[in-house]
Image (cartoon, rainbow, N blue to C red; front, side, top):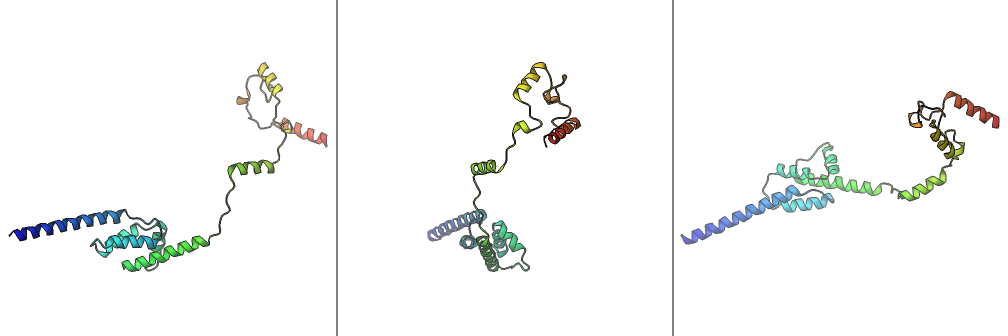
Length: 187
């Protein structure tokens, strides 16, 4: 009787250890995702399923769920998706290897210029217009004079400031005609 009780304890301990190992493997396989190549992912997956006794459909569902999105997408577009776990492993590895080959064959991008380099090259290529040539330019003296008298800087009239100017900074018809006359007079 004592021998059978000891044997029962040993069997109980073994089954508890096995169930704990299975639970741990199930947690690990649920947390496993493809972060590197598919062949490395398949190796890790096979090591974990060796400790489990699930059916093949559950293995397939778990495997495809944790695949990289690109491999999963391309696998789903295949005409005949395999039903066998080993065939899915092979198809996924083939798809992943093809993706890596394509990525290596893409033309290499030239390193982008740093923001400082871009700013200096932009200032060199653009031509600066003298502010005094701009028809909307008002000198500091004129601005101060208009502000002291309470006049609008743009139209030199009382009753509003430049912020409330009715036309904004759009040139009026008279101003456009005046600028056109000035340009004709210069020629």
